[in-house]
Structure formats: structure tokens, C-alpha cells
Image (cartoon, rainbow, N blue to C red; front, side):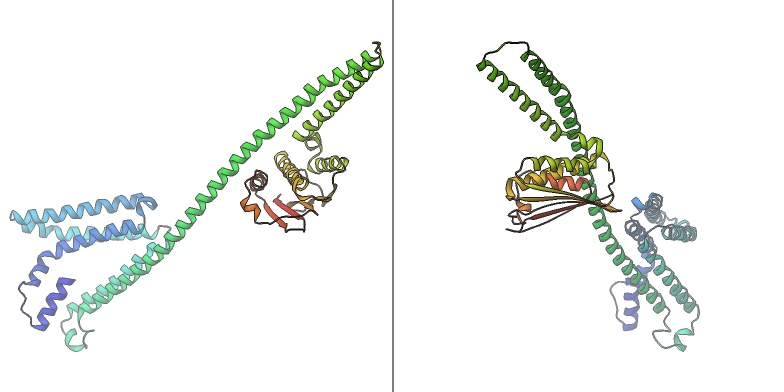
Length: 409
């Protein structure tokens, strides 16, 4: 196109060029056309991401480029050895093959699931329409004299078609750039989601291992060591009636029995904390109520347990995690809040369960949650994330703390 325009401009302006551009254009037009096809095919391959979206299309485009480059070299060799006519005879079948190839490629690209892939086809069809008009005008020699310039100039329609084609190419590239940006963001989100899923799976596996060990350890303590201590107490109690002891030895014996009682009680308390029997048998609500009763028996703080809605038995793993979270929140209130009253509430509805732990303590700066280096709050957050729930903390200095944890059912 550039050589043609320069040659035509030189003729109109009556400028004597050092090089006969028209001759250069005639000699290079075939090579330029084939190179243009090669560049277009390479562009189409990258534009449609053919290597991943359509491997067959990618392979056809690569083979077409190689064949066209071989044809360029073959024509030069044939001309160099005096077989120019053979090269001329191959032009028509090559052009027919290119037409069929372009139709096949257009069909293949049209079927791709990429909205922007069709822009070059729209532009190519418009260019083809204007090229046909230009061809018709070139056959009518009176057209130039009867129609005003530039409409009487047959190449005008050709260039208008090129402009339309380039416009559609530009629109397609803009659409592709926007789509690539969206795909990149979606890929980053998918990667982030996969990392979160892996973390959840890791937490799930870790929690299952921990709870399995807790359950085994609690059973060993309660049934094994607890049974042995109860047997020792029974034996000592039986010995008490069969052995004559003086006053001093009786007191020692009684203190030993009391210490043994306290040891058995403490052992059962530890076993209960490791894996409450009521949690396994009766579920979360019953185990939390027992937990509140146990705290109230210590007279350190007054705990109120509330259940709202119809109780639903959840998966054991979920109930265990919620029980551990409630334990951690209550321990935080006992250690740090200086609270006198505590409310633990389970709220069931059709789609979610909300665990609320609220105290009337001294509260704290909520920003501490993001700066804490301990294991308490990070454990709570990780457990809530494991349950795919939401954590809402409302607190301030001197106004107590309210923690709401909502999980989907």
C-alpha cells in the first residue's frame, strides 16, 4: 500500500523519483502479500490465544506461515534459474488455497468462546465489501470522469475498507485487553480462594487430629487412670474397717482419702474439659449448659446460658469447634475482663447458628485484635474461618465485650 501510494503521488505531483516505485511495487507485491498473510496469521494466533483455546487452529496457522515463507523462497529460486513462468502458474492455485484457508479460519475463529475473537471477522467482511466495490470501479474506466474525486477513485473504497478493518481490529484489541485484565483478576481471586481452601483443609485436618487425641486421652484418663484411683480408694476404704489405727494415724489416713478424692475429682474435671461426655451424647447446647453450671459452682462469676430457636444437632466436628471457641471466650473474660456476669447464647434459625458470648467487664481497644501476639484470638479466628462463619466483636474501654459468631447451616 505504501509503495502504491508513493508511486501514485509521484505521478500526480510529476516528481521524478530516483527509483521506479511502480516497478518495485510490481516485483515485490507478491512477496508483500504473502508476508502480510504471515503476519496476519501470527497476529491471529496470539490474538485468539489459539495455543490454549484451540490447538488445532494454532497448528493450522503455524503450518500456513511456514508454507507461505517456503513459497516466497521457492518463487525467488525459480525466477533465479529462469523458471519464472512456473512461479506465475502457481499464483492462481495458491490464491484459491488462501481463500479456502481464510474461510476455514474465519469459521474456526467464529466458533471460539471469545467475544472479541469475532471483531477481525466483522472488519474483514466490511473490508471485503469495499474491496469488491473498488474492483467493480476499476473495470469501469468512465467512473473516474463522471464521479467527483475521491469517490471516482477506485482505490478510495479500498482504503475506506482498510480503515474500517483497522477500526474493528482496534475495538477487538481493546476488548481483549479488558478481558485479559478481568481474567487476570479472576485468576488471582481463584488462586487466593484455593490458598484459603488449602488453609481450611489444613485446619480441618489439624482440628480432627487434635480432637481425636483429646478424645483418646480423655477416655484413657477417665476409664484407665480414673478407674484405678477409684479402685485404690475402695480398697483403702475397706481396709479402714479392718485395721486398728491410733488417733494420729486415723487423721493421716483420712487426709490421704481426702487427697485421693480430690485427685479423682480433678482427673474427671480434666477429662471432661478434654472431651465433655455430654457433648458427645447430648450435643452442643447440653454441654454448654453443663459448662456454665460448672463455672457457677465456683462462685467466681455468674454465667447465664440461653438457647433461642429449635435445637439442631450439628456435625460433631462443628459442635466441638464451637464448644472450644466458647471455652476460649469465657477464659478470656475470666482472665482479662474482670467481669461479674457472663451470657452465653445459642440462636438457631433456618439458615444459620449464632453463638454469642457477652460480658460486663472492662472491655478493651478493638484495635488490639489486629496486633495481638498471643494464641487466643488467632485460634478463634482460624476456627471461625474453618467453619466458614463470620466473627463480629463489639467492645470498648469500660463497656464490656460482645462476641457474635455466625455460621451457615
